[in-house]
Image (cartoon, rainbow, N blue to C red):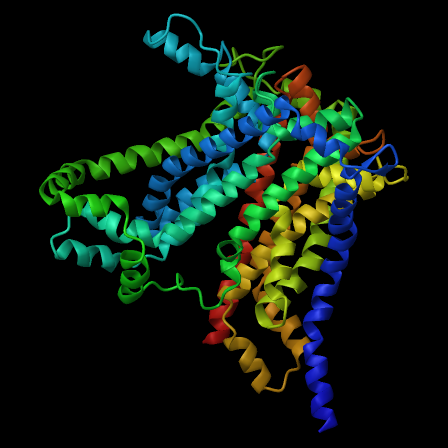
Length: 590
């Protein structure tokens, strides 16, 4: 009896040991710095005080900055929804091969540096850029439009950056909708557009809500694109925090503003926690939408306004639906193509610029050469920065995978109290603005030798990379077929042997994806570099940042081409590993 009890206790401690590494990492590099940030906002001149919050409350300037930030976040979210929905719907209804290709087109910008994409928009939207030149040649305008270094450039750049965050959850929700439901509605006399409003749209609401939440929260603390594409009148909260820390040295006000931004993000995050944590739920009602489930939850409970209006004026509504039905496919293709064009347009500019032979930035290039490649590889500062980013982003990615994979196993294969809370904590760095995390880490490390050291970057990169490792591994484990594990168990293999010889080898593509995501998020980061850089710790994104702000030379395009080449190699390697694993899996089942 005691042996059984001890076995149950030991089994109950498994998730504790699996979660211990990542919880310890988050406690030191995430929870503790954020707690110190909040405490610092409550201090003034060495004593406890609400002075910073009172100044914020009585500051009309801060009010307008908050209003501008909220307006930007809401507008970008709405535009992303309108642009992304047709694309996600088309991907969900395409053949698997075409859908895979379109998803690759969506994923590539998501994995590519925000700096590179923003650089592309500076070239595209400039007074002498290709968009203005095309409009002038067509006679649409008589003089170049000012579309960069103002609000217009910020909105365009932000929509392009945030669009993948809207496409992915929408596609996931639409792909789960049973197509037979809309066919059944059409067989009963409902026009296709009416069937869409009655069936597909309500069933896709989980993805719609998740996408809008992710985009809105990401926009609240976004720093890079507004800073590079905006003007002096487009000042946002994240820029205000950075200015107070890096320029003014007003740490108390910066801590107070960071704490308010953190509080707002956490509140929204908690409101939608069930939707955000849906991947962890084994009994999600959207995994397999049946006609009964769709009717009960989608149609009866949440009938759209358009449906109610059509009930009041059936004949008018029917004619509108019939008119839309005749043009729905061309419109769908047009808007989906527009979304893909928006996602890929910066690359159409950046790649040719890398091979320009002009001594300055001009598009289209007057000729082509490798002069900018040669200049980059002869510049020791750029090479040192590249070496630094490769080393420490790579090591941090390995650390992220090392702590994230065990945590994913604990969350997926074990049930314990506080499971949802721990999951939300581990993925919260995906939501909390990087500027808030960077400022908190800066304050926590201030006065120590870690500021300006590679270890500070390793810690920061691991904090923002580990959530990707957790999320990607959880998705892989949810799709994992445990038949081979049960077969190994029936043959007498213990859990360690099964993990080493069956589970981890079959999860290699998932682990590779987790490592790639964790590496890219660290390699691409600028915000931590702004607060943690030093003479011996300057990552490549900081060199790119300074170049864009001070020079805007084609050297950034060279880095972009190299980045895309590395992504292509990593993607091909992952496909090769995945194909090899799938072949082994098929042989084992046979």
